Image (cartoon, rainbow, N blue to C red):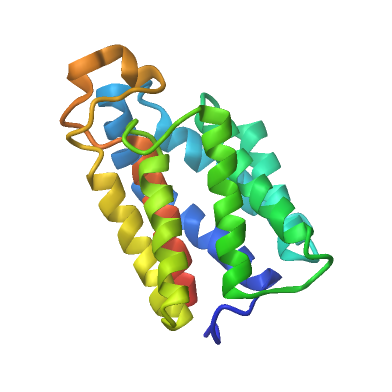
Length: 217
């Protein structure tokens, strides 16, 4: 069981493995969501990417959380097509870069994790030029990061903070249903994009839920 949010490389590896399992289990739903407003390949693409990530980490697990997240991001950019690969790849690489700035530390505090997620969010916003309300993964990631930061500042236990982040991500994904897409392929549909959950926001919720699952073990 994880003892809190003093997380080491093995913890981050477990998060990625749990994310891979969640994406594999949810790939049909993600693809169905993408079929309504996109290319109908989000689930299969992301599953292929996370499968490649798990294989890469099995060959040689990096020594630090920063190095591990950098491998995750680089592999996703290489293996996931469309916009999802660069966006998720950038998010994980920016997280790795933020943790790398701390030095070769083998453990990460809750505050450092939050700062890394904030860096990942900033990278996604910068690359996709997306804001909340555009009906993208930002609509799940941004409220999750805010919820994590708020919970930690209010003194919540790390597992409770992770639970708050996961819940905020899921609520953020569901909140994209009535939105009209303003970014990406879905934006070409105009009003026809209304009434469908954004697949990127849905997959982001899976990954934040995986973080809570590992933290709660």
